[in-house]
Image (cartoon, rainbow, N blue to C red; front, top):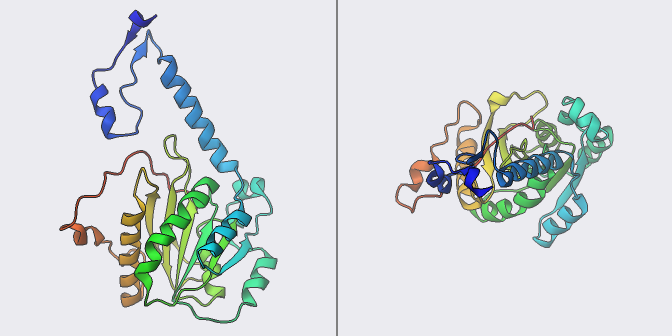
Length: 265
């Protein structure tokens, strides 16, 4: 059969991207190996959406790194409701709301929330390395407990931040899986979080993973945005990300490859 396999002349370009290009063909179809790889990626993307977040392990990992943690759940009682009713994922369950309201007012400058979103793989795999990369840059900040949120949408961070009286909330959440990125993490930064904030009031850093935007570069961008959000008293369309200009005298960061699919809103 090898004599029927035609290689794509663009094959050399594959070294620059994870996108599905230059796969070759066998007759009018794909060769078997790329077809099987596609089916595997599709299965991994579906698994990422439905796989539950192991909160016990995540809390233990965070506490081992000396983070104080809290556990919350959205108003979506299970994954089926979460996927069918995005609005439920944007509000806390009554039990979680009562629990957060009872937390002593520490008025933190920033609260980090880890949400499963549409990929618990991303939340469990990328969140802790990112926190380890960014926390040393925030030595002069008053940081609240890390909140682990199940069945979470981006806007859930607004209610969490409001109840904890936080100046800023940073939501680390699993993005909608792509066929080459089932474990991509999104970062959403909101100043003055409260129920009803719009997406125009947030800044987003997307595709955080070693194969995309790596942890040091993501931490650099997040620190830049946090610093200027605190100075200006805002996030969103009024806060420009000019962090790349500060990297002009440093070695170039690796190119972002693959797919980025923010979609846990």
